Image (cartoon, rainbow, N blue to C red):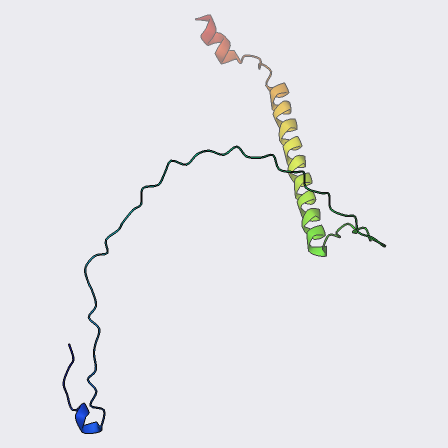
Length: 116
């Protein structure tokens, strides 16, 4: 529906028409799909091998370790050695205490108490 206003005064007397937005929900229509028949897949032909490059090709040099990586590895090795030394010392001290744990000679008081 056209609105009326003061457009006639400006020389543009043609009425403006504003579209009306449809707010009704859209109707979904589904088509019945026929049952799909399974097709037997034809064996694919083998892909051709890639052509070898012509001319001179360079072999890739092995990657060099950065200085930081070398330092980190050195520190880790040093720490592992310290841990191994401490573990060895702990084992030796345990062995020493086991050897020293011989039965002691009973004191006079203990002998007297055992005799009663």
